[in-house]
Length: 75
Image 1 (cartoon, rainbow, N blue to C red):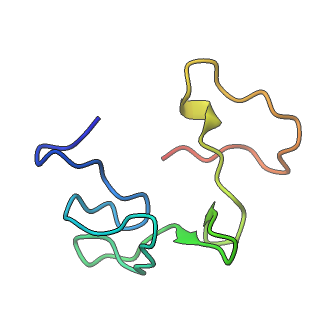
Image 2: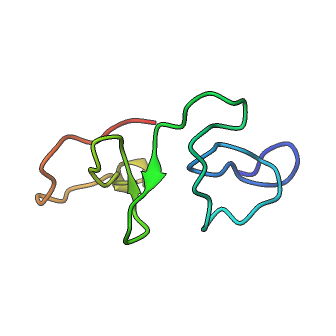
């Protein structure tokens, strides 16, 4: 759901301020602390090790993919 200012948080910087979240490449969070995730060259959200993050676990049916090399990371 959207935050108190009517915008969802950006997955990279967690900011609710107006900016293009599809192009966010911030290395810090909204509060100045280090960002955990970043965008890969192919525009996927990845962890510090470069492994793509899966968001299907957040969906009502969860993720049943057998192609993941690692366990899901919770946010």
